[in-house]
Length: 384
Length: 131
Image (cartoon, rainbow over all chains, first blue to last red):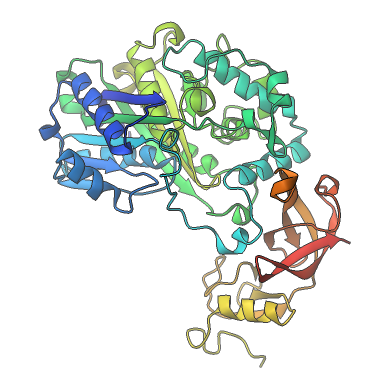
């Protein structure tokens, strides 16, 4: 029997704002603009929103600050902070809250001015006390340690890591909104400034401004809106550690668990997925998640990406907006995985449209490979 | 019966303070669970493997292996490059540290290392040298 949350809610509006640089704008102004874009997309008003799901790296009480700013008095709110994967966890929480009748119109939103507002942004994250003393350059070094071990254990090469960045850039070149669209080669990535071995600056995500918003409602109302609804098919979160020294095996993430549970809820398998949006904070992420989510065997991710599978024209499109590596990365990226898959499943992704896309996988990462959240979205045909 | 911090697990200075005090005295102490017998790092109030509060502090052997390694790159005027490693101790626990006294480029995964107590940021720190 299908899980009760499968197909129970749908995304009916999305909005973006300040992608790249938005000088002179605060993070709440950007969040508000994205929210109004999403409401306009859905044909709803701010006063219709009664479920608020948000988190950020600035506000200690994110749902209180955002609720006050927008004038929302939510019947249900969730400000869980899992890092960049928060918004995927919020989508699961929103689906559950809608299904339980705790709210009618759920708003998931995020905004950051971390690029142009630099110097003002203070990350609220506490530093792990038994690591901080060694002055690890967070978050890069955590991912560098995972990449180094993956290379040692499986023969993954820096060229294969670079192939992830090149594929993301090729997708970005098809997306007019993407921040970085100039040509990028494997050689460019290898010769870029080394940050933490083996990762160069081109193995690392962008630092940009940006905001995103998503509106979700119950399936019964999903077809009453102007845009084609995109349904929640399944989702799950998993976590095995906080700090990188506590990760049991740095080559295996908790995506192996979140993905398994999300697929079980949706009654689907990796072979049913037409495209993926994977949180590519660093090039190693895409490789780890392709393996852990079941799209290739453990250790094969490097070869899989270097063979062109994930780039435009490949058999498994990944990060079709250009990802955090080339499109946008305003500190927390997760919400953009939901927005890009919605665009693709509506069939309105323009030049980068994946033909025949019915099921899209969104995957969020938070902390130091710590939080893993998988959400499967699908068209009406895939949901029912 | 040996003295364990589970005699009175919720009284006096906690396991974190005990660890830091021992480090100041030049000793690296690692907790071991008296129920599931696995070692624990960093020091905690209960065993993350089985939930037991019957934990005992024991001196670490001080030997280990580099599990993974990276180099934090920075300009010479900012202090230059330095090593960050994950070290698997003989007891089976892992910690972040630095392998020192050799160039960061020479630190390799699988390298045998030995603990020594140094200082970082004005506090005693467990560092490692090539064994």
